[in-house]
Image (cartoon, rainbow, N blue to C red; front, top):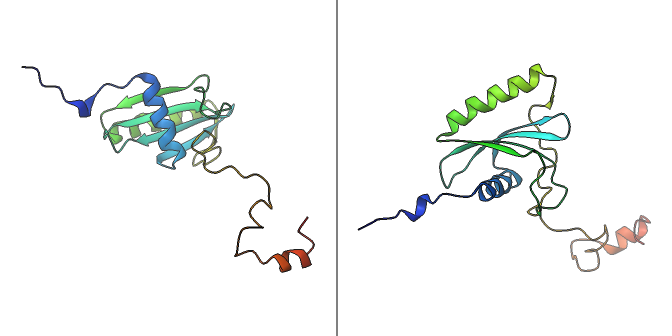
Length: 143
């Protein structure tokens, strides 16, 4: 009789990358650095698997439809191991003059899980009871 553990299923590379982007866009990256060339290096702990990851990627121009070109990730059994690898990659990038900002939140949420889309700056003013329409009109800000 074969017993399978469905909790520890192997994920495809695309599933792992998708999960890492989801965690990063939800603000779950432990550390994140902006590198030159609109590249980012992130240290991510997946609470579901307990594994640690280092993710290097560019900006997602397709709103989650495609993985940004040059995306790479490294998987480690623990967050501590991933943190050591992250520090090493960050140091190498620093020596190469590629680090723009060590603690960056630039472009977080730029893919499909970024939240609600804003139509225009007055889109909610007609329905929002907290907006004082008379005050807005008196200031000349209403159109």
